[in-house]
Image (cartoon, rainbow, N blue to C red; front, side, top):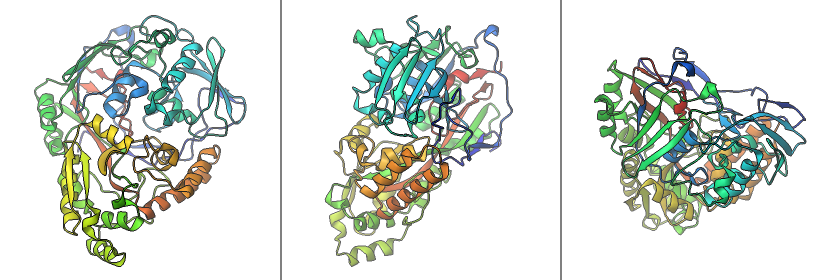
Length: 529
């Protein structure tokens, strides 16, 4: 593909920060391993704010955001929007996946567990109010009332106002997840006055972000305008507006791009890659990502309550054929329980395609294949195709499978509540520690630990890795051990790690493409003409 930005993801296992009393603008020293561009697109300078804003852009989403309130965001479409309208103390850098200051002007570590963060003076919310430390504390307290935000608040226990622009956060014990969590949508800042007034942030999300929410035509579109008083002029919006069109069908999104109905398709279906790549009117982006596509198994059910049962299921699935059927070979299958781009992830102990071995394993342990039957919940598109291949593979070894289609919001609810047998969906994090904490630690059961994994040895390894704030290698080694245990137990059925395939008008410059899939950072997009 001649018009692509390809990133080689050699990612740090987690992001260390020093716990000595250092102030500054970077939350940690340069890591030993970073994400580095393999093939850089030409660097183009965006137009100055003084030159005026470019015309608006129209962006196509495959799914409608179910919510607009940051603490309730649980799928990519919602994260796309909340990062347009709000900011956190930190944001995730697109190339390194490291947290870098956003609202924060400076910070200092008071001790191994206590940190003080000072925000820029003069930051304005969309309602005209100036942001202060009171808004930060109120936002944290507000977010903790929503179960969707629980995991992003586990890294710190206490928080308080120090002065008008400074907050103090106490992690309780050394915690390597703090800065990552402070970049999470669950920790985006909202006006205290609106929180206390009972404002509905789903109807009207008010933050300090580069775009102001204007209106939402449910089932159809959302509209945003550039925020003129955005505090960070270097990252202020360069287009006057963003219209988000909801177009669930992949082919329809491609046609909309070709006809000029939209300017940017953030999810190009693989069958259209060659056609778009051959057209000089469009630019194609192909970024290896960190999103892990998984078939979660509810380990509390009798079909999945032993490693042998789960292993027999895993060994019967032809993942290579599955990704070819669903993605035309543009995606690589995976066998590791953790995303392979992260240092510390491995396929040691994992089980590859071996249907005869699956049958032999069931015979050895006296497992009736019919007793392992289950229902898969998923949604339309490539994941439904993957479900159909899995259904055929398991039928070949005597395991009956049915498929139930749901929308993304419903699937998330079922997976988090435990009211499911198996479900195909994606999950992304910017670090291996974040992934392992959310997917395999028992404290996350009922939220993101959808397979209901409850393994004391894995919990202990993740806890030790979390407390290892200064030694990348020690943390990575602990997480590597946890991944191997997860592989050996086949708690989930990993399917593939997603590649972000996007396309846009060739006159539109889209400089930032996070491997995590979100944020989109549409504030950095600009027109050449």
